[in-house]
Length: 84
Image (cartoon, rainbow, N blue to C red):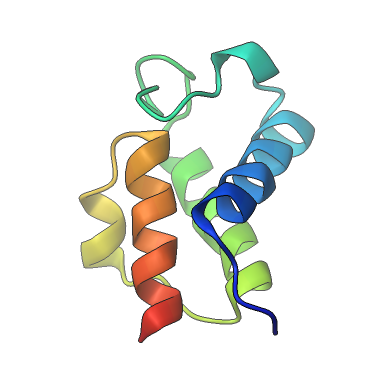
């Protein structure tokens, strides 16, 4: 699998949020809060983690995912996961 940059991860994440969660594309920015700004709930967060695993082929630990609040946090978590 080719190396994903943070921009690549952001684009993948944005696509998932628009296609699967019907988030308005303009609202998807690095400092957007997943729950307050994008109206995701805890079930959506789990679904998002599962979708991201399909791209990374790595499991996001529940402990790590609980720390994620913003789009930027998701991008950083995926970058960290891919470096393991």
